[in-house]
Length: 167
Ligand code: S3P
Image (cartoon, rainbow, N blue to C red; front, top):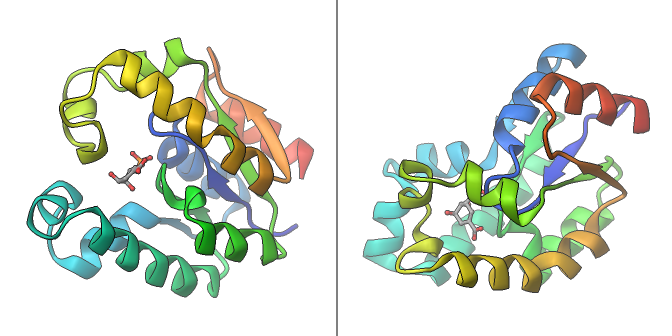
């Protein structure tokens, strides 16, 4: 079985599900956002503030390429699959790409409070803006994924089992 790559909007649970999946599969796990922060030596929000989104996307692209060359269960960031160059890399990869699909309600629930604040892309955004951004990214996830898993009202372990059943 090949190790899956998780994509999907912020708040879909890519990190938690990726961890659960790696545990069940007994495989190493890599969270791309964590790898980026480790590489930068600073948090993503502070890098966004200092250098802006374009600089972040450049680092994200380089680290995605690097981590696609290692055989981990990989959780991407919410915007990773929505950059054309990244999308091409993900489609070309042999591993199953899994889209964790959450409803707007689940997304809002999962992104409340601190979880909203640590996402620089959501700074000064309203719930409506979030729904619009989510809708505008849908086609990227759709066109990149081999498998779609609905995550609403499921715990990470159940989602992990569902992914394993489908790959
Ligand atoms: C982003 C999502 C974040 C992180 C960065 C940008 C986005 O990852 O990569 O803040 O553009 O959607 P999560 O999906 O893990 O929050």
